[in-house]
Image (cartoon, rainbow, N blue to C red):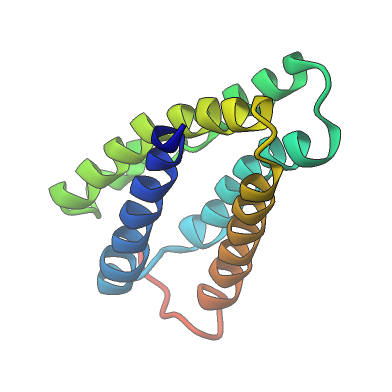
Length: 143
């Protein structure tokens, strides 16, 4: 059961490095300032479904699948602006993304709603941080 928490821990560590090292180092262009909070919304939706509406697994699968595809939207434009190490971190996040959703489902099946509520709250707070931190007033515009 403890292994079900590992993907969330790894994802959090990698997101921390990506956000607070790479994004701070290079700044974010407008499309990323908008796109990253939208990515986070697509993560919030499946977690919220498990916490508040789960009954039928099909909507959860659809929400997770959409999120897994949506978060890849920026990769074709990252090549010219991201260091290889940042792109590697992104690839690690792409691997962990569906694994975290699977683990969230298994935790839900085992009645671990308290952890899912915490994960939902942390993800929501991170989205608010993204919106506030990368607002136009706080960050220089990059190409």
